[in-house]
Length: 282
Image (cartoon, rainbow, N blue to C red):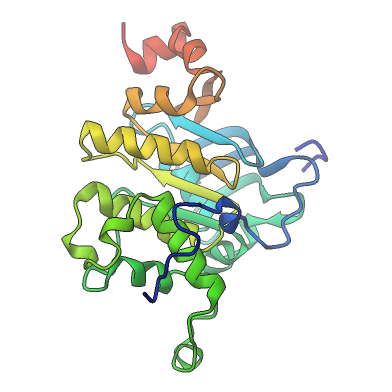
């Protein structure tokens, strides 16, 4: 890698403290880059899922990744989070978190502890527990049962729960069982649970699948609000949502056949002939 690369409380009313999301770990982002993917090739037997792919995610960046089915989007996220590694695939290239953390040498739990959170398409929450308790259970603190039996909720954790409820627009349902929430609310709750873990990098796989137009617009506002406090990669097929997220300046990466087909603003990639031909259509 090169050097370039109640119980919840009020907690201040409606004021949100986005700084609570910041990862307090030891990730070296002295060059402004939180994730380096360099010359990555991933093969499953004879099938090449990713082909010499390079990608750099800036600290605090909101990056959208689009592309047709089979483009390598999920495999890329699997490699970043350790779900796919040398034990179950042939991998060449480098994937670093910051300057020093080699993700290809780590297992999934280690990578999560280093500050990478991932949300899959289907929400996964503790449906019988209240919303606020879902956030508490997801807190980045020590959750071993021996510790949990003696633990009390600290003022800091209580404040972060209250802030996360506000950020995710879940204050009004804080005491409802998570299983009673709408699909969109469950999606926001799971993202909030990831935020409680203070991620440096958040990976979201098709987060608006199954959402109404109103819920989609609401989530776009939320992700734009938290962008900057952590880096976010969104893999999505909803082009309206991607366009809203990226705005006029955000970078959109288009993958095809395991490689970067195009990269630039949403307007630039929409006008790229190769992208039109292989993905967007004429």
